Amino acid sequence: MNAQLEPVARRPRLGFLGVGWIGCQRMQVLAESGLAEIAAVADASCDALEQARACAPQARPARDLAGLLAMDDLDGLVIATPSGAHAGQAIAALESGLAVFCQKPLTRTAAEARQVLDAAQRADRLLDVDFSYRYVAGVAQLREAVRTGELGELYAIDLVFHNAYGPDKDWFYDIARSGGGCVMDLGIHLVDLALWIAGAPAPGTVDAQLYAAGRPLQAPVDRVEDYASVQWRLDGGASVRMACSWRLPAGCDAVIGASFYGTGGGAALRNVGGSFYDFNVERFDGTSSTPVASPPDAWGGRALVDWTRRLAAGGRYDPAAGHLLDVARLVDAVYGR
Image (cartoon, rainbow, N blue to C red; front, side, top):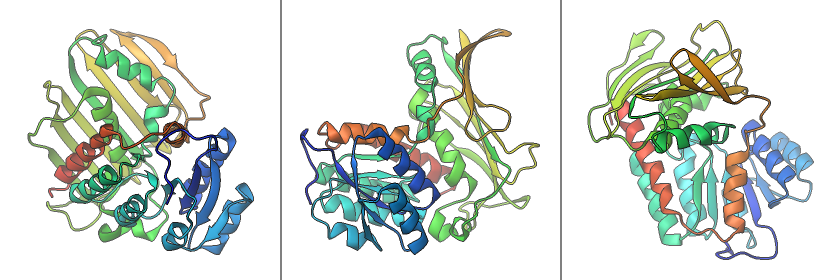
């Protein structure tokens, strides 16, 4: 395969593996950006392939990963398949010389994440995951405020992601295929935000309480959870509290937030009116708040666009991908693995 390692005149040629709702949405955003050529699409569903080619009529169709890897002119692969397949698919693509952008979670376990990262490093290929909430307008400023000490000494982080609905695909409820329930599906975004904004966790205890249909689960869990309450500490001593759920009777579609509190002020990302898509970012000083960013904001595909821009500029393996292992290790700790 011809994954480019230096800037070239043509746009990167990308294959899309899995073109269901999320895969098609990301592909549409990338097509509109003009940064890459959508050269191939693969899905086991003929209907999904037909819909994808309506967005990218020039894309060659394939039924599976093998069909994509048989094409000798791709530079990268975008993966949006069930979670349990991610590790094997990513490693196969990397070993074939392709850069990889994967939907979250990258893998089900930290051991799998280590294998994928090792493959990316051996192949010297760009690897990233669609942690899309980093790209909501105002979140970069929030991170800057935390990292530069504008909020003073950070001592508390509150994270929440309650979804009034559950996933509509059966594989989400099979722990062998999904790796976990609401933490793997929703909470992993919060874990990423906390670690990316404030730093990696201390190698201490993660206190996690997981529930399924209102009943507590014992670690290591062997079924998917639909509610989780988790607490841990960062290296600097800040306390992190996280709650996430499927089908919680929250009185709205979703409750999503990431709040950061320091000795000199606070800042938060919060969804607006129960929306899955609209967010405010604000700074706090006592009882007063200052807006940083607000909707409308089309943030959904920005992570893929950023990865594509780096690939087009000749991006090789980025050591910052080691963050993905930090996230996976903390999620493992939540599940008692």
